[in-house]
Image (cartoon, rainbow, N blue to C red; front, side, top):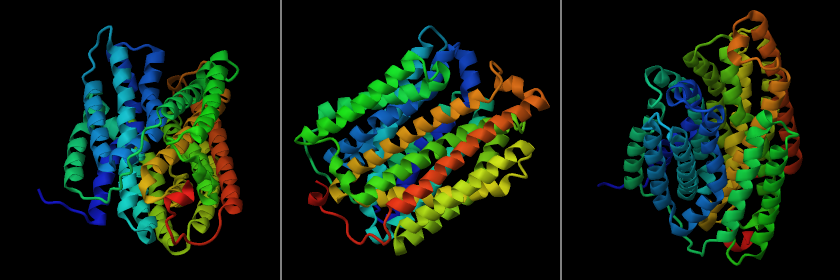
Amino acid sequence: MKKYSSQNFVLAAMIVTVSMTFIDQTIIALAVPKIQAELHLSQSGVQWVINAYVLTMAATFMVAGKFADSFGHKKMVIIGTLIFAISSGACGFTQSNSYSEAWIITFRALQGVGAAFLFSSALALVIATIPLAQRGLKLAVFFAITGAMTGIGPLLGGYLTAWKWQAVFWVNIPVAIAALILIVIAEPVDHVRRVPLDWKGSIVIAAGMTLSVLGFQHASSWGWSNAKTIVCIAAGVALLAGFVVVERRANYPLANLAIFKIRAFFVENIVLFLASMVFVSLFFFASVYAQVSLLDSSSTAGLYILTFFIGFAPAAMRGGRIMDKVGAKGVVVVGAAVSAIGFFLWSERLTTLSSGSQWWSIIIAGAGMGLIIGPAATDASNRSAKETYGEVTGITQTVRYFGSSVGLAVFMTILIQNTSAGASYYELARSSAGRLEFAHAMQDVFYAMSAILAVTFVVALVGLQRGRQEVIPDLDTTA
């Protein structure tokens, strides 16, 4: 079989590979009612079908990154893709019996593990293959396309669910087969640095992420003052703090936390945390708003979300070019300002109950976010030595998913507090008064998103330094 080592081929192979993970974050949302009805799942079971994927993905990202550095990124991409594809197939073959709930939740959790392994390794391969001077543009393409896949999820999920709910899982199998073929014939640059795995650190970080993310995921339903919420978040945060102590004492740490002493890496991770609070949450809230307040069908709601990417994709690629020339600060600062303005304008128009009046503000919000996500992630990754790309990717992705969990918890709380107690989305959509009430509640959510992006602007403006990075640091620099 002929091998291909060109940068563009490696980039395309990795985009196809990780596209499954982004689509799967949102594709299942529209299939949930059918899944619950046919499998007779409890309400908590339904929530776990949605949350198990993100929970295990967030908990294993850092471990997956270290595995990839130690055993080879290409090998880990293949293993992650196989785990993801097999788990997807198993979810689709869930039978309606007394084991239905345990079966589908277990394999959704395994999907998350596979996603963490394939994503951290795939991104590390892209970074290793592409020279520093061209990385901004190439990774902008990577994040623009994969980010758009998150928006395609609801659209694709709507059409597939209309056929049968199992298709939202089975669609991953042909994509995985194509990805495996591309991975096998691709010859990316792959740096391997074999070191003993820090099992103690792995267990502590996984437990800390699991408990804290679980607490944030359920805060809106349990209540912020509920003992379960407080215990989960407090215990999770305590374990994350303990992880820092464990890593400082480890001979071969899971994550070299000294890299946070590099100012750009530290600030870019704060930027990614804040931006991810908004970016990942957006697709859920925009989809629900479109179906409740605009009375859109599930497929039309997907098109409403895709408007965001009319601004996001070209801005991300333009931002990548600028970053390659002058550095990340200007791009990220402008992106945060533009997105904050865009989300504020979008908020103002939500109560018009007209998607046409919102298009330009949605596009502006998308353009601003496109200037943030790719350049910030690329600049953070550029601060690592070549032998630790997987490790650093694991750190940045853990930060992003932690941010998204916090964002979902905060925004869901705002939405619930401003919506009639006990009213379902279906009941609100039945009357014009309910639709308008929901739009006002959602308006407060989007105002909060705008405020967080304004904070992102201040952090980037004050924290980042001007100039383009010219040299990749040696291992000793980050040790």
